[in-house]
Length: 340
Image (cartoon, rainbow, N blue to C red):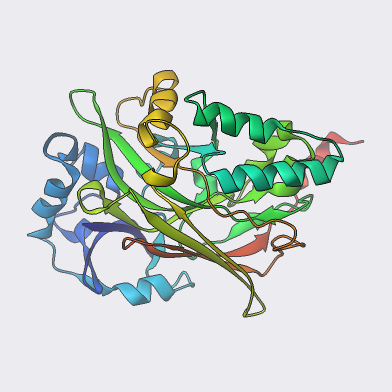
């Protein structure tokens, strides 16, 4: 089963079920839920399962929208997609967003090389962390602190004015909820872009929180959420193409999925470390990025992403293409009040 969330101008968030090339509007079924969160926690999904809860609504829903139109629309006058999982309206922090790093060998090696080039020193922190995790040790885990800064398909990733080298990171994302008995449940999978200021991270790994977090749009999710019963997460092919002025200027692809994670226990190893310290609180969802097998080094994209570029991230298994443009992050006027 594939689920989407979309914005209806004048009405707000709505929940849809993808059936072939159409989207069935589940919110229109007797004032149905507007989000996956509400379907799961208010529609009985935490008891009977997300799929069964959606099927109950499917019987009463009638309105259909063309999926292609939702995927293609970039204006706010017609319905358009947003991220496929979120907190309910007015409660963005009911979605937590956490990520793993150094989970694929190729990304660990390239990050180490870039750190050495940026500092001129033989820094080996990434290699050390890769070896530690490969041996069953503690993984690198971090958060996108503001869920509203995680956007959906077609929505912009912002570029801060002090960015050194912004790059996309193409990552499979698993989504979690807690059943009524309190047990964790993998609800489904979607695509993710963990946008990163690779320049400041390479200069000093302690810059990681700033390299990963800023206002407006520092990551994306989408375009669809595929329920866990229908998605094979063992072998997943991903790719990323970058367009500038309509022309492809960079392209990379690579394998991810459980079989390509570098630690014993694969995904469960990451989950144990994440949820043992940060148990998922009641009526909260978690989006968890697995780390990327694709790294755009300076040889691939010397300038990094620039304003006006478009990223097209492709995920196998039916998730599809997650597309986001890059726009400048406006300098906050509030800084003027600090003087100096």
